[in-house]
Length: 405
Image (tube, rainbow, N blue to C red; front, top):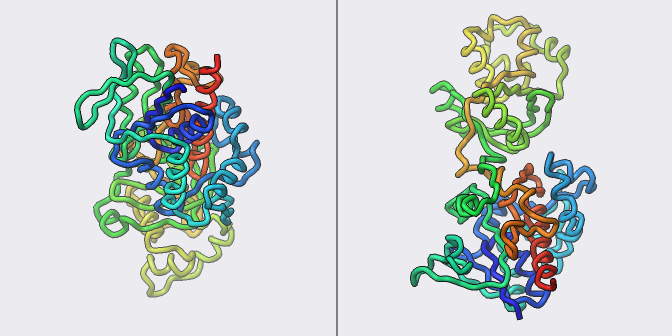
């Protein structure tokens, strides 16, 4: 029986381990943390979004320029297969109103517990608190464990160490230097599905930190989408922001800033807004007038004030026409990207040119890679986990084919 080491106990690594064990390999999963699936549990804290229900052609576009690179893996283990896998573990799935797919329990913990029981039954061993540090001179895997440095021989290895977001959960990106030293092309790890910094005034920050902006539309260049965002102490984050994070991040990298526009009442057209804003406000404060006439929340009014004060203007001095324009195109200058440690995921990683169709690293025969270690990114909504699971399956199958040869 062959010995296969899987390094990383997240979704990609655990899925590779399952495929390998069912294929007859003796599998040991190594992880630096004291327990498996820590980031997976974090992903399910507010509801585990396993995948998405949209048709596969549309689904694949979410991976942008890496769609073709991931297509074979996701077609071989598509969303329907992931849902069937979850159901076989006792967690049937359902489709939410947004098209996102969730397990019945809505949480990650029941699914993970059932999965770990299945892996145990299949004979998968776990070596936790083992931090991988590369290879020794004889090609053995080196691990820092509680008893000191260990050298482990394996017939094949699957690397599934994740990206560099939420490093306290185990994926700190330290593997990038190890592989770069082996001549592997690794794109720098960058925040993805992340927040951005804004130079809020002290007054706005103190009053509105943590407040949601609901029912808004965001515009950046040719991109326009609906969703929600949250004001943070340092700037802004939230689902709608995450969906544009790749474009915003690259713009900031090139220009040092990015100008985002927020429509506060995207369902109300210009003419209707002008009509609502035209009557005299009487003795009302201007903030109260805006809240009643345009149905703006306090944080939305604060955002308008923030935009005009920065430009040396006054909301009350604006014509109804100009005010209506501003309400549905509030300019917000993003000055930087929030730290990768707080990002939901990361971009960058091992170049796809470095791996073959079976996810083996060409320069390291017998070493395979899966999950966020590879250079792809995707928005939230189930796309991140789907690709992690699918590439884990692909790497596991790739190892079995390589061992046969």
